[in-house]
Length: 137
Image 1: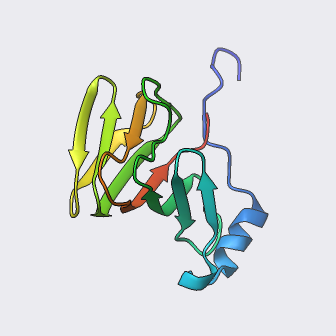
Image 2: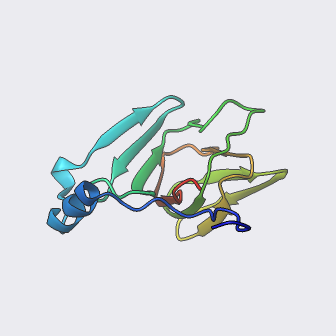
């Protein structure tokens, strides 16, 4: 339409993705979880029975000394992170601030802010993590 600017909107989720979500099993059995071993002594276990667009729901494990990136560096990406620590200790640096969380603590931060997570303790840090990365506009 003349005189109007094109709006920005989220792309529609494709039919194939919707069909996969609708027909996905409701339960993710523990013995068949997807598992990723990452650099830095980190393991991700997928807690959803299928890919969910824009969401990673994970059991995370940071080995003793494990870190999301090298000391002095930070990472950024779209989205928001929500975490709940089950055991161990996890230091979370967001921007210039560092906080240490322990069992039963939860945290939230905007993932576009430079951040780093690392295990300063003497046992693995295990938690439940959700990363919500909305579709790019």
